[in-house]
Length: 111
Image (cartoon, rainbow, N blue to C red; front, side, top):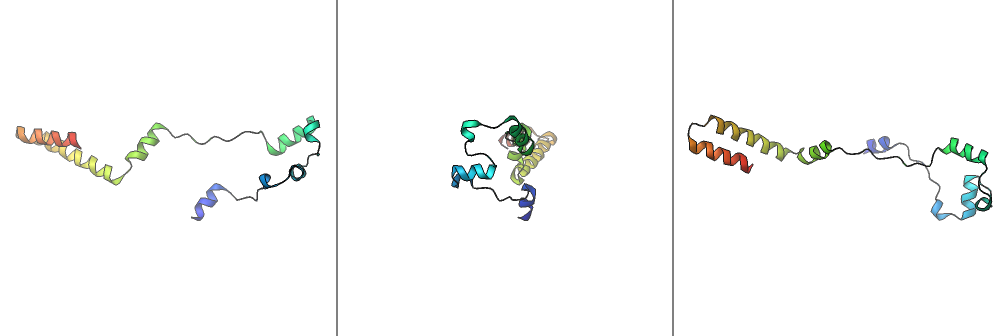
């Protein structure tokens, strides 16, 4: 349980932007109240870019096709079925009568 929090990183107290007024948000960001009319200066934009970085979302790690297949077959019951199929193939290969060969081949097909 504790490992999940450590892996995600430290939890920060986030400013509740949705619950504050426009003026409180401007004060938290250190902006002038008439920012929507005047905009940022080039110097302000550069300092904010250095301080906060680019306005870019991070991408999740993509799951490959092999990872998806492994997630589906990584199961004890699937392993048991594969083992039984291998035993049936070996029995079919070493069978001495045609009846047993056909029976074991049908078993492998069903598994």
